[in-house]
Length: 193
Image (cartoon, rainbow, N blue to C red):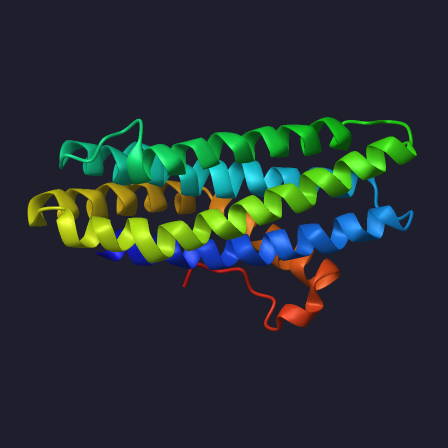
């Protein structure tokens, strides 16, 4: 399925961004970092990982899987939805810290470090579960017509996100964050490919 490949490519971008976030948080522990810079990470996570990526999963792929007979509230889909909500809570903590206008206290630096590392650990495990378990299940169990509808719906969402340059701006933001905080990841482009 084309949609699955797109989602997996997005996972690689998200992984690069969370590695940069962890490096940023580690720098905050040593006294560096600014709320504005944290806000750039929050923007990427909320607008790319959540609004673009998770929306395709929740509104398109998971909905199709439920239509094909998967339970929504437990099993693989229930676990993925729970992870999405847990991630949103972690990002909410980061967003609150990004809104600070005065320097972070030591307790706030620790909170930032904990939220960043917690979010990264959650996302690493979540992405592995999707790539290794959920997506293969979808590819095996979605009937052909439903799989085509998923591909088309995800393609339509991609076209809308790309038409106004929003997706490209988020990919550029990812690349900038990776180059600045995790240059050891190699090629800096954060493109879905």
